[in-house]
Image 1 (cartoon, rainbow, N blue to C red):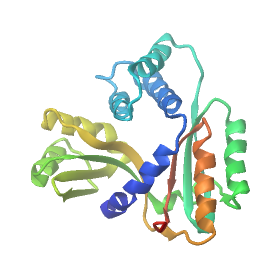
Image 2: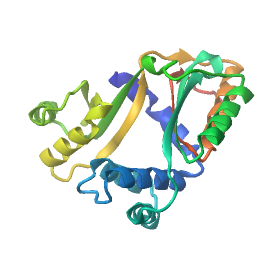
Image 3: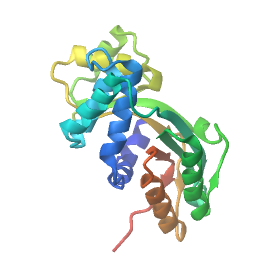
Length: 243
């Protein structure tokens, strides 16, 4: 499992870089987390993790504060999560996570990205079973045993743990995110997460080749340009382009 994540870090970073509206995406997610779990980051671990990630992605403080204030006031849009699954170029598997205040509009926009790139949107659950829904934490540390012990003591279900060049990567089921994060923060003072997120990791990968490569890039760009799209997960492996 871990290797797949390490190998895909670069492509995931490219996908993230393609997001032209990163502030509004974070603002929407922070607003929803604060509205559902409380506006105090100390009591809402999902919110705290989101704020830390937003700061690492250089989202300005005023964007974060505005989203929390909006949740505190109880007014504002009422977003709900929506997930779409299907097959992208080269028959790769794709999961699209959205937050929307208009599900009909969002479905239409996402479906258009599929149809315009000759892809097929599927029914709920069509491809999700081919991914592991994981919480992932990566941080500098050299003692894998100490990390595992801290998580076990907190009764966290650890799926996998890796130590590569002093970087520990911990994988747990997505439902263990808050508990695992709290255990690590409590056990290791001043911990600085290089990865702190919930991801869909593919169990297998699909090679995307030839004419499907530009189509795949167009597909990702179309999805990432949609305001309602928060994350795009896929199992595509695209060969490096030689200049």
